Image 1 (cartoon, rainbow, N blue to C red):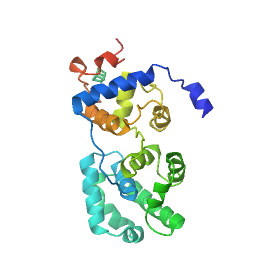
Image 2 (cartoon, rainbow, N blue to C red; image 1 turned 90 degrees about the horizontal axis):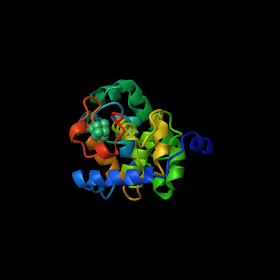
Image 3 (cartoon, rainbow, N blue to C red; image 1 turned 120 degrees about the vertical axis):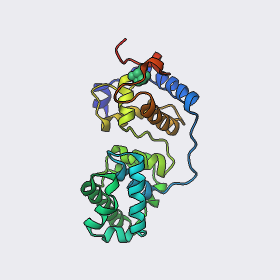
Length: 229
Ligand code: SF4
């Protein structure tokens, strides 16, 4: 941990910068409210399906998967081909079906049943450590389970957030997506992880797009380092 801090020192102004960004985005997009309940296992499978695809494709794949395998036990026993055809809309079928069955196998072996409810009794750091034992599950997936499945303070860094962070200057340009989770942890304003995460994604989809970002009429222009001014 200390080596990381030494290599990637955070300036004391960054926390303030993030606060201003969270405020400006809430002013524009509002303060999204959390749902009351989430199921960590459903969130885990949905997040595995969401890799490298859009929400619509993920949702379609998840609905098809649950329609075909309403019980997790059946999904665990299912033939690869049957899973592959169910989750086709999400793409990367081989990799995703392998990770899904890997995760279910791991849960069953650890808990003796197919549920992630045991996570509710754990602290967030322990959950991070435990879920990373599942092959194919990385920091973004773990943070999604924490944020959406367990209603914890956690900040998943997706491609939109990574891109915006590097342009605006709250994530170092040379930092990869996995390490960016560790980087962001102390910077996200308290109680704002849910709204900042969702609002940055909306901002990335509509304004700060990968190509042709709308810099001329941007609410974060004053905070932004891109293009170098
Ligand atoms: S000024 Fe341009 S690059 Fe910077 S946040 Fe706005 S849209 Fe993105």
